[in-house]
Image 1: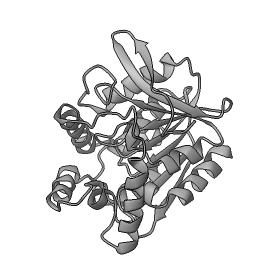
Image 2: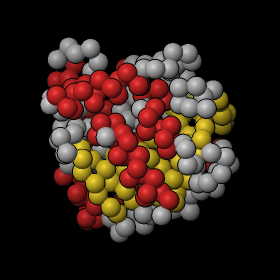
Image 3: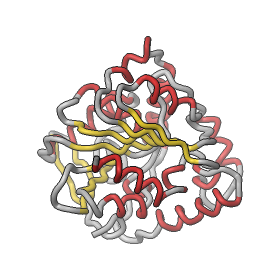
Image 4: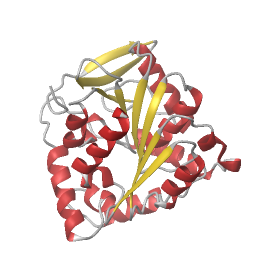
Length: 274
C-alpha cells in the first residue's frame, strides 16, 4: 500500500466526515501529516510519504472543507488545529507524531501546546511561528503571474536549474495517482486559509510564549531561500523552543522537503526513531 494506491477512508465525527488514507506498518507511533495552504492528500510527495511509511504507520487526511471532507474550512489556525485534534481522537489514537508543512506546521505548534499528552514529537517544515514573517499573497500572485506549467515550480523551488529540475521531479511524482484523486481546492478553501495564515503571523506573541510552551522534541526544516516564509522564522522557532533541532537545506525554497526528499526522510527517520 502506498500514497498512490491507498484507499480513501472516511471518519464520521458529529456532523463532519473526514477523508483520510492510512498505510505503512501496523505498529509504532502513527505519523499524522498536516498539509500546506490549499493542499490535499494528493499534494504530498509520494517519495517522502512512502519512505516514511516503511518504518511507521502514516496517516494523511483532508481537514474540514478540503478534498472530499465535509464541513466548512475555518479561517483561524486555532480552529483548524481543533478540527485536526477531533480527527486524531476520532481514530482512537492515544499518542501520535506530527509532520506539519507550511500551514500544517502552524497547526502542529498549537496541537503540541494544547495537547501535550497526545503529541509525542513534531516536525515543522517551511512554517512560521505566531507573529512570524509571511509574504503569502505576494509570493502566490508572483508565482501565478509566471505562467509556468505548474505553479508549484516557482512557488516551492528556487530559479536555479538544480532546484527547478528537482521541482519537475516532484510534480511528476505528486501527479502519479490517477484514480480517486482529491479535487483541487477553490476559493472556499484558499480564502479562509489565507486569512488564517495572515492572522497567525499578524498576532504578536509576547516573549514567544507559544514556542516556549512546546516541550516536545521538535525537528525544524526550512529552505534557505523560502520567499513565502523566510528562513528567519525557522531560526526564531529554534531559539525559542526547549528541545528543537534546525536544518536548512541549500538552494531551496518553500518546498525544500520535496527538493531534498531522500535527505529529508533520512533526517525525519533519525529524529523519530531516537
